[in-house]
Amino acid sequence: MPIRKVEIRLEDMLDELTTFYDAKVWHFLTVNGIDLGDGKIELQWIFSKYGVKDETVLFSAVTAYETKVPSVVSLIPSATLSEREIVDMFGVEIEGAAKGLYLDEDSLTMPLRCSL
Image 1: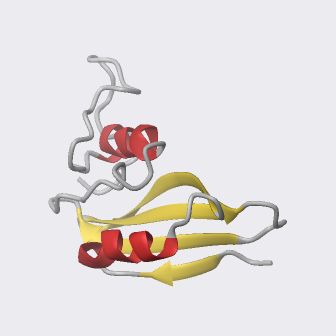
Image 2: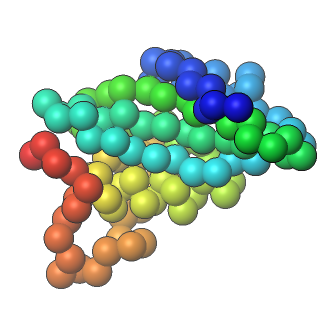
């Protein structure tokens, strides 16, 4: 079964995920980022269904790098590491997510951000 992609607006993301997410049904995999150029990033929240082979849902929102992204940690505590990775790798500001988890002080900053 292919991945089901659900495109959402960033401002609706928390409501959409709250409606969708049931911790007994869905396993949160990660938050992913894709640099789209022109100062924009696509953020993806990815889930797989427990006990079902190859059922994956990907929620996708496109936003500007300057936009502060709401955190999903209150809904999905395990998202902490994924959110911090996005902060380090792309320079996106996510509410409550500190930077400095994956990169040393002397590391290249925002190494996955192609459009500066």
